[in-house]
Image 1 (cartoon, helix red, strand yellow):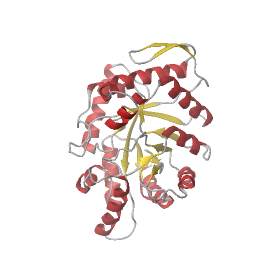
Image 2 (cartoon, rainbow, N blue to C red):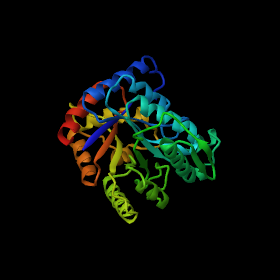
Image 3 (cartoon, rainbow, N blue to C red):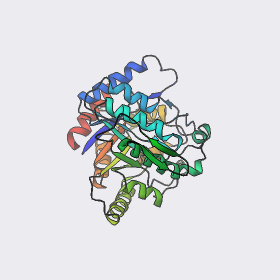
Image 4 (cartoon, rainbow, N blue to C red):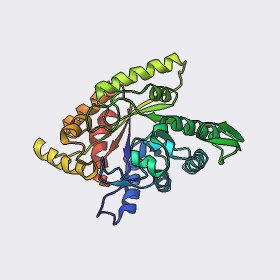
Length: 326
């Protein structure tokens, strides 16, 4: 079992002072404490309905922390592919992967926030097809040279993107089921097209809002889809989630603190009852039980949001999650 952590790349209004150094300090501390990877959320515009914060650019921030770390992996969960131009994206990823020493994990997805597509001039109804084209085009450009690609949305005529990657980044595709709730922006079940995209990738990132019972269901679907396609290459079952650890206090006091911490990032559209069911608040014992439930469901790689640049949270996660489960 391996663990990664999300960088504090979100901008909390009123707390901008010192943020760049906080990101660097957080990245260095995570590497020193034994986290396997650093992750970042990708939103081009602020999703006000679901989050209180906006995010720094994902790939630029990963490039920034690559310069202050040595071996920790760097991942996007997820990079919103349908709003990006494949040649430019391939150049950015190839540069990041090359300069970081082959540390990037190409976590991808379709995105879901309507205003983001509008702002980028993309019809949201095309997101699945565009995602597949951008993924195919970028991975072809990694393998290059002189790539010929004739898609519905993108065309490449003998295009070469360098640096050439001897070891292209692994692709982890996100999506799948989630707890049915009015606070969920997407349908609650695994889409067949998403299933095929995941099965063709090198790994799967289960949604934060996918509870253990649904993770197990989706995992079985993925295993069957890969077997049907004759794929037996290495594959990682990953899952991202949110947590905040408190070592002292009553259960009620701990949850009061956690409600405040979750509320810094997640909007009131997602009520506490929903957060408590799909995310990982609670006492240390309760959080450990939630981690174990996800391991039992088939998760072998977990990426955690701490919702803070507080290095002490990294130390607590290392002590209470990585040590017993890693």
